Every structure is written in C-alpha cells, then in structure tokens.
Amino acid sequence: MLSIVGFITIVVIVAILLRGKTIPIIPLIIIPIIAALITGFGLADIGEFFTEGSLKVMNVVIMFIFAILYFGLMQHVGLFDPLINRMVQITQGNIVTISIGTVVIAAVAHLDGSGASTFLITIPALLPLYQRMKMNPYLLLLLIGGSASIMNMVPWAGPLGRAASVLEMDVTELWRPLIPIQIIGMVLMIILATFLGIMEKRRIEKKYGSAKIALEEIKEAKESTEPKEKPALLWLNLLLTILVVIMLVWGVIPAGLVFMIALSIALVINFRTADEQNDIIKEHAASALTMGTIILAAGSFLGILSGTGMLDSIATDAVKIIPEFISPYIHLIIGVLGLPLDLLLSTDAYYFALLPVADQIGTTFGISSLATTYAMIVGNIVGTFVSPFSPALWLALGLAGLEMGKHIRYSFFWLWGISIILLIVSFFMGLI
Picture 1 (cartoon, rainbow, N blue to C red):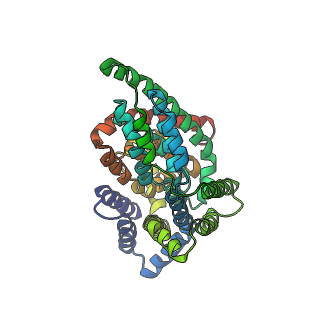
Picture 2 (cartoon, rainbow, N blue to C red; picture 1 turned 135 degrees about the horizontal axis):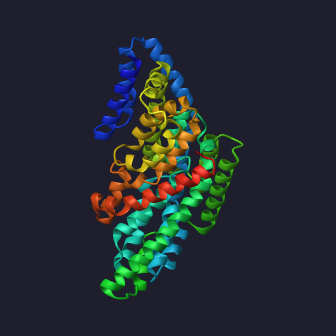
C-alpha cells in the first residue's frame, strides 16, 4: 500500500512539474498531504512530518535567500563588469580566442548562480562579436550554457541546495569535494571551446574567406557592460566577495550566516540611505523568496514521504525487481543517463522526486547516499541549459533569436560527452 501510494505520489508530482502549469510549491505541498491522508495518517501526524522536514532544510533556505540577495547586489553594482569588458577586448579578431573567452566570461557572469542574469550579461555583449565574425550563434549558446552549468555546482546556484535538502546535510559540505570537478570541468570546456573554435574558423574561411573584426564592434560590445560604480567601491566589493568565498570553503561558520554578514556589509558600503538599501533588496527579493519557498516546500514533501515510510517502502519493493548484476552500479547508470534525463525532467523533479528514490535503492545495495548524489549531480548538471524545462534557457534563446530544437541538436552530445568524462574522473577520484 505504501509503495503503491508513494510511487503514484512521485509520478503525479513529476507529471505536474513536467507540464509546467503550476509553480513547484503547489504539487510539492498538496500531493504528499493527500497521499498521507489516503494511507491513514491524521493531520497531527502530517503536522509532525512537516515540522521535521522543514527544520531539516531551514539552513539551506537561509543560505539561498541571502546568497541570492548578495550576488544580485554585486551584479547590480557592476562588480564583474571590468573583467567582462577586458575579455571582450582581448578576444577581438581571433575566433578561437573568442570561443575560449566566451567560456571564461560565462563562468564569471554565473558567479551569482542565476542563469537569467548570466545570459542577460553575456549574450548582448558577445552576440555582436559572433555576428561580425559570422560565427554560429549556437556555438555561443553551447559555450555559455556549458560553462554556466559547471559553475552551477556552487552551493547557492540551486541544484546543490536541492540535493542537500534531500540528504539533510549542509550544502557547503556537499560542495567542497566538487570543487576539483568544477575545475576539471572548466578545463574541459576550454578544450572544447578550442576545438570547436578551430572547426568554426575552418568553416568560416571555407564559406566566407578570412574576416577582420572592426574595432567599432568591440567598442559597442564593451559599452553594453559598462561598470556602474566607482573603482574604489569595486575593489571593496571584490575584497568582500573573495572573503565570502574563503569563508565558504573554510566552513568555520554556516554559509547562511556568511551571506547574512556579507549582505549587511555590502549594503552599507554601496548604499548610503535606508531607501536605497530597501530598493536593492526589493529588486532581488522575488528571486530569493522564490527559491526559499521551493526549498521549504521540498522539505515538507520529503518530510511527509519519509515520515509515512513511503520512501523506505518503495526502495524495499524496488529492490525485488532490479536485476542483481545491476545493483552495484545503479548510481553509475543513473549518472550516465543524467543529462538525457534533463530532457525529460525539470531540476525540481530530478532532485526532489528521483534522487530520494535512487538514494533509498542505492543504500539498500550498500551504495552510500553521497556516492549516489554525486553521480546524479555530475551526470546531470552539465546539461542544465540544454533542458527545455530551464526558464533561463528560453530567455537565452529569445535574446539570441535561436530555436530550442536546433540548440539541443547542436549542444546535446558535446555536453553529454563532458558529463561522462566528469563521471569517469569522479569515479577514479573516489567521489562516486
């Protein structure tokens, strides 16, 4: 009974998330409550399950809200603009350098963990260069999306927060072992950018002959990302951000407290009046609260499914139908299929519905929760911006005037290849 109801609950939630007709919090909250009532639990029991689940994700909620506000503020004051401007200037006239520069610029732009802001910063700045050099704009989207996806492993970006809430652990502890994977992933993206840049150069020379980029185009791209603040403030903001990253890696205090302190200091440094400080908070509050509500709803969902015993029951029964020879490798199989699953599952469905079940099954076969989680993260995250369920990707397509189908066909196998390489690296590093 518990297995059947639990399985139907997860399928219904995934189906609703796939349809995209409602925001994630609605099915994550309502459907598990209905399931718990069907299986005979009372409102008092459900209240206890909710409390337990919510308390377990509270630290993640605090971290997300204040991290999004902090990095939103840093984007607003133009902290990353000088580096982006410099990279735009450096890449003039060389197709391979433009490709590599695109990867670097996207990585810097995605430090706030927001796909929307990354595309808003990079596409308007770099698209003129690609157009002037007659470069394929789908290459631009591939390189930005791949680079931003690897940077999306930072603890404030979304996927790790979701995974940490499922595992009931601190998100920065989950992130630290992934730092070498991020570095290797960025190296792979630079190698891919070099290879595709060479191929693109040959294509352009064959079709159009050699071309020289006009300095006016560089100036136009540069002016689209002018810094918004004085140099002295930029240096202070840079120092503050470096200290934030150091504190996150060090882990001496919770990540949420780090961002609370950093946001308070940043507000005082950059805005002199209470009205200005309120305005900047309001400007980024929607993104922060949206992520916070999703994580809280996920806590309720997981608390109810765990408290009722549905997850344990599903895992126990699933073990009976999984072939014995597959069981020791279940996490690797899911990892390899992680990126293709991006075409079928939203991020919420992948982490909130699939991960808990995969974790329970893996644990039954002696696979640690961390191994399963890392396999699913590494196998899936590179495809973040190749998924039709990514709202930020639709924004990018609109900014660049491109089509989803062509983007998937152009980018899918390159990014899946990087995903599989990173899985292999993670395996030999002992991460999975």
